[in-house]
Length: 113
Length: 111
Image (cartoon, rainbow over all chains, first blue to last red):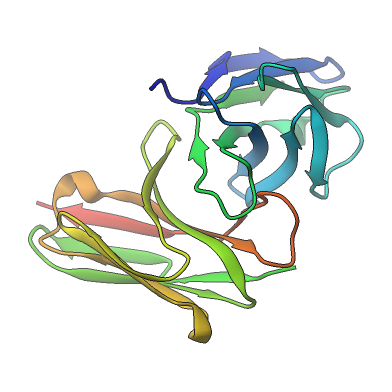
């Protein structure tokens, strides 16, 4: 069974631009969560989607948004990029979410110049 | 929200040594996972262990949910064990699959 895939793997943007990251979960998994990892803040939860609905949201500004499609693939969007958005963005999939084992993708490394 | 503390923050070992990493959490959990982050950033699943004991080769883990801690044991360490180990928990009070991560233990195994 294929693992979680994320595209692109690396991205360089400039301040003020917007970016869209994509995540394809493990086949059969319906929950997709997004995390941001930075040296200063560690790994922080952004949001979770389940059956095309946002089920849980972390403490991030509205510039961070996401969506999930009917095939469970998910995208996250960051608008008006700031230098502080430079981070590794990780996506995780699980069968239903709460209490289930989660599996992470390889991540997208975003650099904002 | 739930708090997660890992110790020690850094650990340096000689190849062949054994080690124990600890994870304390502040509330009841419905999920606890141990991960190893590889040099490229991917989180590799080691254990899914909200309670009980599991073993996988040289690694084993124990979670005592009633006392709110989990331990990861690495025996006969190898240089390839180097990296950051994370404990992550899902609180029973949170909906969905939100994981709260500890700050990690940076393990260095020297030859």
